[in-house]
Image 1 (cartoon, one colour):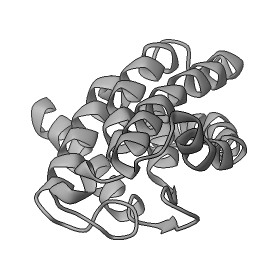
Image 2: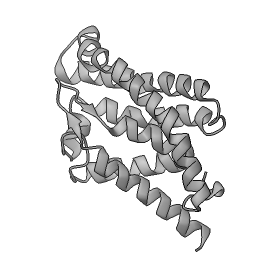
Image 3: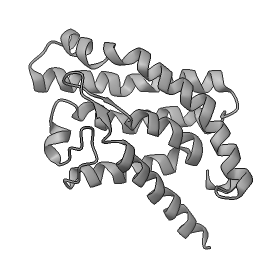
Image 4: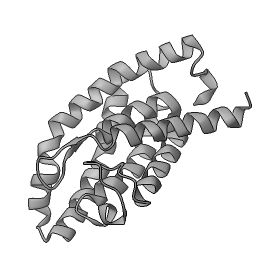
Length: 183
């Protein structure tokens, strides 16, 4: 199969994975617990920064077009303009920042965990600022409902990805499903 066709197929599969897992969420307030960041933590390990970023942009465009791929099975521009829009947009720079480390140092799990945790603060801060603006809250109040309830759970997601994704990556490479060159 042509290399570019393989690459497009991998990107499309990762975008599809985001579309399937991204809407699954638990509404606990203005910001739901979602599987989007967990999915991104895994995908970055499997296909690298560039392909993860492209898959995520495709996912955002699909959601922007109105398909219900965002948390709570929502879609459309109102979701990006609503209280959680900053978090959704903030995932893109998160991918780029964590990808710089994870892609180059996938075997150093501590470094990967630290980079994923540090990068997660990008959507936390962008999302909090956007939530505060759209909901008429102070930054502190928005931080209290949009970040504090998620810190521990997001650490669990990061640890799960750091432990399981390299194993999955190794098995996919060994089976030939995902060649070394895909990253």
